[in-house]
Length: 403
Image 1: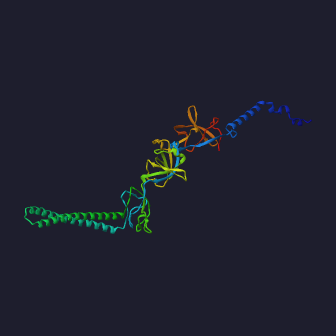
Image 2: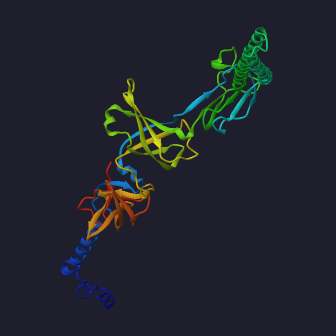
Image 3: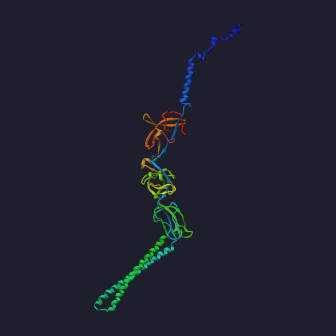
């Protein structure tokens, strides 16, 4: 064979590399790497088993929720209200209020045309003056007759005047006394006429029956108003009024829950129109009759504090409490159920949801509110935490939400 071809031969002894089968350390290293990768995927990766948990969203709650025994809904109703009308028929000449006007007891709300009544009143006043003048004249006549009677009485006893003249003096004296009595009676008649005229005039003024607020206006100036709407096309009431200091919530309580309500029981009132404020209340009355159709009993809850924004007919919700709320218990607090907390090394912690995993975070707790615990630190509103976490749940565990 030519020398050049010999150079092209491969020396298999020198160029052969060691195979894997000849080096077990490489195989063990590969297996160890695969095991470590599998463990990482199992404990921290997508191969880790998920645990089913229940969630709770951290939110602010009112302490009253922990002491609520019963809830009911109803409406704000003025216990003192009136449809104000006139006692006489007439045309409305003046109207000085409108919806929302605050009035005092006795304040003139409206006036009917009353020129004729004013004239009748003035005439009665003049008649009283005339009667009083007549009484003065009768009294003067009585004084003169009395003097003459006494003088003639003495003279006739001494036979200085005729008996006939004395009898005339006696008759004049009696007539003068009767004249005074008649004058006094005429004064009383005139005074009664004045009172009648004054009453008729007063009926033309429509006054507020109590301190309150005008809620509705039914008539306008120029319209005819009459008591009970007796006249055709006449208004029966001019305005309606309500005493805002008498506002109460009238709520229907089911008959089956009536044993959980009692007079004087503390309550908390929430109005849909004022959702950011809760009002202290108290059961004022349980109306002693039931609604057969609804199987409910009407309960009246009075406000222990007032607000100008509270108006009649507002919808309201009432929470009947087991105990009165203290000053510090009127504000909302961040809270979670007791089951959302775990104790480790004497410290309170909670599992916070982060994506599909949980994170164990320390929390600072405050007052216990029945089955809720106040959170003072470590959680914020809107956080989602695990409720009643299983013992196998650890920091960083994968979870799925229980439906």
